[in-house]
Image 1 (cartoon, rainbow, N blue to C red):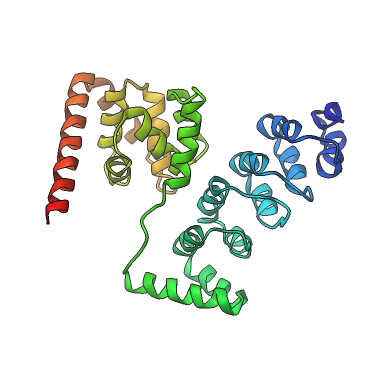
Image 2 (cartoon, rainbow, N blue to C red):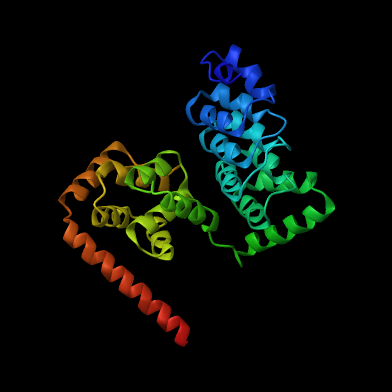
Length: 283
């Protein structure tokens, strides 16, 4: 069964991946990490899917795959898995609806889902929600409309993921570049924070800046290659992509910037952050 599940021909592997109860979690993980979107779709339609498998499927899966996972009540989702779904749902109204209907979604992520949704999707969610959920939606939408009490981006789950990878000894520049190339925004920020030994509050502020200079400074200070810096720039500007000319200019700036200068600037940012915190505590 394991050999059949690993077959590149989806006509062979598909029925096994979707229906076989003899495949173990490790077998499904191997397929989820390396095979095609059709293989991922077959796994997404299993009656039961473990969290570890679901995390990989939603991270690698295309729109059809993640929609099927979100609509599958037998798919167990970790906080990391939910965070990935919420992020991908930002540009997918159907996925937003499927995720919002899951009874196991953590409340902070449900709120984040609403904040990211378009007004059309928000209204559709309100109409189809249960009375209890409708009350929560109404409250959150009221906060959004007035611009008050909007929750900051939650990096808790991403930070736990990154720290687990660090404890396993596999957190490095390549892992960070993979986060960025796979559009894992929160994990990219958390990974940059841990690898560069910079508080996540600073990294968050630098990454959301409209300017790209902070990113190239942090990456140069850490000794990263341009390809890594570029991947981070692309993930932070997803939906507002830079032109090829702008990227070429940024690359030249990155190459000209010395590591010592970049490190000096990062130390200044860190010192200013510590001063701001101290001032806030005293006040």
